[in-house]
Structures are given as C-alpha cells and as structure tokens.
Amino acid sequence: MLHRLAAPALGVLLLLIAGAVAQAAEACKFVKLVDLPVTMEGLRPLISTKINGKDALFLVDSGAFYSMLAADAPPKFGLKTTAAPFGFYIKGVGGDQGARVSRVEEFTYAGVPIKGIEFLVSGEGYGPGAAGLIGQNILGATDMEFDLANGVIRLFRGKDCEHANLAYWAAGMALSSLAIEDQTPTKPHIIASAKLNGHDIRVVFDSGASTSLLSRAAAARAGVTASSDGVVSAGIGGGIGSRKIETSIGLFQEFALGDESIKNARIRISDRELPGADMLLGDDFLLSHRVMVARSQRKVYFTYSGGPVFRLGQPSGSRVADAGPAASGSSAAGAAAQQEGPKTADEFSRRGAASAARREYPAAIADFGHAIELEPNESRHYYDRAMARLNNLEPVLAMSDLSQTLKLKPDDLRALSIRGELYLSSKDTTAAEADFDAALKLAPQDKQMPLRFAATYVRARLYEQAVQKLDTWIAAHPNDDLDPAALEGRCRARALWGKQLDAALADCDAAMKHNQKLSVTSETRALVLFRLGRYDEAIKEYDATLRLQPKSPWGLYGRGLAKLKKGQATEGQADIAAATAVQPAIEREMKSYGLAPGDVAGGRPVAATP
Image 1 (cartoon, helix red, strand yellow):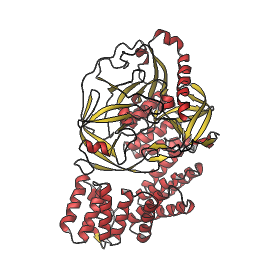
Image 2: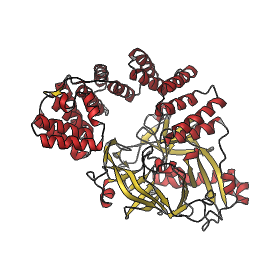
Image 3: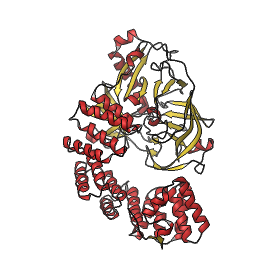
Image 4: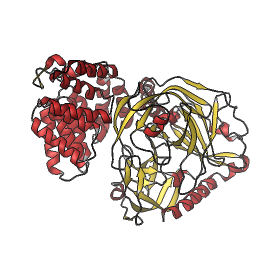
C-alpha cells in the first residue's frame, strides 16, 4: 500500500510547486522552486509545516524512506490511525519497530497543500516539539540543496541540465561531485561510494542522523577495532527501533569522498549494522558542507563550508581537497539563489542555530543578540541565546536569558526545565523544585521528563532525592518500556551514593533482565559489587563491561581498584594506567566519589568530596 502511494505523492508535489514558478521556468533551465527555512535544534534540522491548517514542526530526514508522525502526534492533531499492512515493520539502527498509518487531509509543505497524504505512525524523539519526520516519499520530488550553515534548504527543478554543473554557488571553490545509486520507491536512499583507509564503503546522506555513524564491520575492514589505539568509548546510542547500541569513536587515517580527503578523521562507530550501508553521513557532515542532491542527474555536488567535519567541537583531523571544476552552465538561477547576509530576526535566529549546532557559540550568541534587537519581545530568541551561553560556559548570563524567556512566556517548558537544572547545580533545591513542578504540570503525559529530572539530581550528587523521585516513577509505571532506564538510573544513584547497595544490585539485575545487557548497566552493577566488597564478582562484571567497551575509563579504573583489593598489584596498576591514558582526569573524578586507590576501605567510600 505505502509503495503505491509514494510515486503519486512525489508527482503531485512536483506539479504543484512547478506550477507556482511556471514563469521562472520559461526563463531558466535550473530553477529554484522555494527556500525552506531550517531551524537547527542541536543537530536536528526542523522545518515548519501545517497539518490540516495547524502549525507543525518536522524533522527533515533524507535517510527515511517514508514520512512519519510521532506516536503522540495523531491525538494532538485530531488524526485517526489504522493498522499498517500485515507483516509491515520499520527497520532502523535500533532494530525493527512496528507502525500504524494515519491519513492527513491536507499537509502543507514548502507552502504547497498536499491533499490526502498518508504517514506512518511510529516512534518518538524526532526533535523538540517535532510532530514527525519528512522522508523520501516527499523529499524525493525535487533536486535539493542542503545549506544548513545558513539555515535553509532549497528545492530546485532542472530542465535540459543532464550535463550541467548544478553547484551554482561554487565558482572558484574546491568542488566535489560523485554519482549516487539508482533510486526506486522501495530503495529511495541517497547512496554513494567513499573510501575509508583505502577500503571501499557505501555511504548514505542522512539528514535524520545527528552525527555520522560507521558500522563496526566497516571499521574493522578499515583496520580499526574496539581495542585499537585511539578508540574511545562514546556511550550508548539509538535510533528507530527500541534497542540501544554501543558506540565508540575511532581514529582513521583517511576518509575520502569525491575529491575531498579528511586525514586523521575521528568517526563514531556503531555496534550494530546499518541497514543498506556502511556509514551514515549525518548533520555534522551537512553542516560543514554545502550539498546539492541532484536526483535529476543521479549526482551529489558538495563544497566545504568550514569547521570540523565529524565529531563537532573536537579536533577532527586535517582536510585536504583537490580542486574541482568551477561551477558553470547551470543557468541564471544560481545568482538568484545566492544568499545574502541575514536581515530579519528569523534569519539571524536560523544562522545562530546553525552556528550553535557547530559549537561556534560566540557567533551564535552574536546572531541571537541581533535577533533580540529586532524582536525584543520574542521569547525564543532569549532561550536560544541562553543555551548558547550555557554551552559557552556562561551560566550566569544564561540564567538571566532564561528568566527573561519565562517573563515573556511563563509556560515555556524547555526554559523551566533548564533553569531548574541550573538552580539545582547551585544547590538551590527550592527554586529548582518550583521550576520542575511547573514543567511537570504543563506536560503531565511526558513520561520521560521525571526521569530527566531525576538524572539531574544524580548529576548534582543529591542521591537521596534522586532515589525518591525514581521510586515514585517506577511505582507509577509498572511494566513500562522505560522501566530498564529507570531501574538502571536508580541503581546508579545508589551505587554512587554508596548506600542501599543490596537494593541497587536488585535494580541493576532487573534492568538487565528487562533489556539487553548494556555497558552502562554492567559498569554500574560492577561498582555496586565492588562497594559490597564482592571483588571477584566485581572483576568478572568489569570484564563484561570491557568486552562491550574495551576503552571505558570507569570500567578499567574500577577493575583496577578491585584487583588491588585482591592483592593483584601489578594487574591493578596496569588497569588504572590504561584508564588514565584514555581519560587523564579519571583519578580526580574517581577520588571525588571516594574511589581512588588510597580512599577505599572494604570497598566503601571513606570520604567523597563534591
């Protein structure tokens, strides 16, 4: 059913947009149809649409074969859902996931109303406030330019452009172009070939992936494994599907795409295979490049815009690019589509969001400041500047902006949550509780929010309060799909607290029984066993942690402490040295929890400093 719908949706959309610019098409061979303003929420490109006349934010996801609504969206927009075809499921990074179907009578995209379009209904977490994602059944209607650094996606239509260079902006720049694989309704992904350490890999241009992701099998073919030099633990990730995945960051001598070569590239590695590809090129890549997906030519053009390509905010290796041909032959539409500097508050805001996504916080703060000057009563500009200031380590100024946000919009859920976390970090629990309570009253159906607040208490080392909040949540949500995360969180709070350790062990065991065994749960369980003085079991559990994440600094250090308690001085010191090599500040961090070699007695903390 869904495959039959895909092609008509594309055709109708293309005709509607093309009709809106028919006069321009007569004069130009490569015509810009429309600009789609993009707001980067972190590393997620969101655009504004309408569902039956109601405003709705959607994630632009070039890696999704079909457009989807989040599971909680239909009730918000008064939509009904029906069962998907028998045996239908969605395959993603996090495994397989079921779905339903919902029909939208009028969906407005790029200013064009599309009548009677169906969406899959599945999953959540498409971005703050996002109702869903737009996939290839809609995106595939046109040629598309990703200019995320300037906060815009542009749609184009070509005529007689088979041999033209469509990178209209690239005159005098190093330009790369490469062929993409044939696309069909069942395989609509944008797939090209690249090389990693000289080995061929298949990459998908995926704007729905916040960061680029490489399969562990492809990394191994390129000579990098979990235990290789330069590999570090990157924690737990996920995507479509309920399963969580172990991730790490590996160092690769060279990543080559088209005429661009990135030396000493640090790339995130996934513990699971990626459906249909070896690597996802995510928004970190798209933010550092300007990319034209020319479906009409089965090509992708791109130029480098600046900043790290992978692992934004960290050294990402040096970039080398061979000069490509200067752009020519794509008609006068190129000059019309060139973007000048921002003039309106929205334009400054979008450019600021893109800078913040690249972790260029001073530039983001400046642009949000210009937006505030132009729209001093718009609360979101203060919130955006607050987040940039917070990431720029300016918490006092961030607090001021959050308070101004709430003065203008007292029901701003995000501002209440973040201000509460700031209050808690300064141990002002009364003010924090007031903000958290206000946020919870605004979103009583949000099951994840209380868990996020509990994690904030753990980070603030207010363990007793964290445990109390998790007690309340777990009692209220029996047999919930979030139970494993809640149980692991309560286990960790008790483990770091050093109290209620038998209950902590029961929590970790229950979390593992409910879910697959993850390194974070294994590591926490090992700490509980260590603090119970059960060193042999702790070493065994740390071994399990390190099989999943061989470079985990907490796993290595904890196992080293357990071996020292067993009198295995040489082995214990070797593990501690290995942990320190991965994370030089690990000893200071562990000491603050009473876990440095000289601070443990019977496995329990002697003194923990905040």
